[in-house]
Length: 547
Image 1: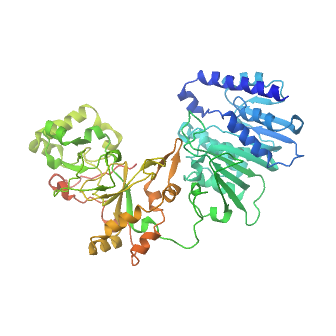
Image 2 (image 1 turned 90 degrees about the vertical axis):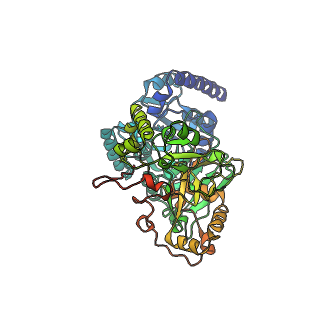
Image 3 (image 1 turned 30 degrees about the horizontal axis):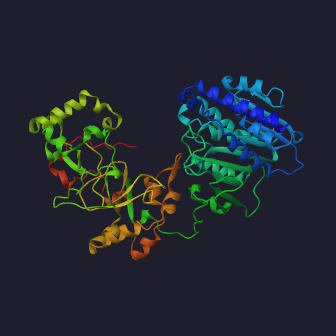
């Protein structure tokens, strides 16, 4: 029997490769078709076997079965006499028809249908699924409304319009499960951090007993052709017991993870980012200071076209452009050999690669009169439709940039744990007058910190040194990760990092910070190129693009 299953799995694996090759990457992305690797499927079913009693007969459901990777693993792990029923749905005949032929004599019932339209039958005690990873923008508005309605009726989840199709599969399957049944979902781990995932997390805490969330090491991409970080979510269809704790595991395999931590469900209910676990500690109920108490954090500016708006001194000279139309801007982090930027007497960064940002709010007619070469450069940009690009369209004038004053400390926006320094993110002390593009996060001191710095010129360096003592795990726990091990920190995520060490450095700080109080992001003039930033005549606006 085992030899026959091995033969069928080899045939299925070859069939999967053949069918995938006949589709383009774009076609598979649109339908979220990324097959589960055989070793992973077997690992998942082996773990499932530990959650069912030994004498319990299995009624198996896979709502997005594909060619049957999980069903094949089911047969490897469970004796044939224990499998009472197996049902799979597949919406694409490209996969369903040949897979049905492959499994025709095995006992699997394959149905060519869209699972989201099917009427539930709550009899299955084992639901295992790698649902289609279809992002919300591939779902039409009418389809979104239908899915939201059906998901709510099936599970009580009020999913937002930003939720991917995999969230609806999880919700809809709830109505197919028998009481006490077990589900294992191989899904993107992003639901643990993003806003649309709040409804999923509330469902997992309130409607079912969440057993375990296993996150794979993002440097070990589970799907070679889909750059997402994956997790397996296990739960039982029963209300959670009192004082329930959830196992968070990371790395290795489901049965032998590298890291493990039990987290009380009560703590999870108040935790915004679940990907902090198992590496991070549970936050205390008392309030702790975070970086938001000391800094207003803003993403660096987005130009709309870096090649056009960011030039080096040689390019500026070759076009005979006026220097007063530019302000210095830091190059990409890869061009910064260290974590401190020195400056000359004019505030220019002492770097081998010096760059300058075109940024003026003078009207074009005045530029034409005073700076003909700059006017010609702007006309050249128009001839290439740069002024029609989204960000430029939402600025007035189109060549003016967002107001990002130089920040004394900036943090890199993207990073990898396996960098040479071992630190995925860098805090950089910026002694120059250079602003930053959106590959950095600009950190502006709150008023209380700014006052302290004004009274002690050495304090900003001490603050920078403390920031560089923040552990990589603290930063990674607040950020997000993508397949291949690429980590990202958004401004709000960096702002949420524990900053108790700064509290000890500045024990008497106060926290009144708001954007308005800071006065940093209104239509203020920047001293670096004040002559080129005159206020427009009445009726002009300085629109700043959103992100």
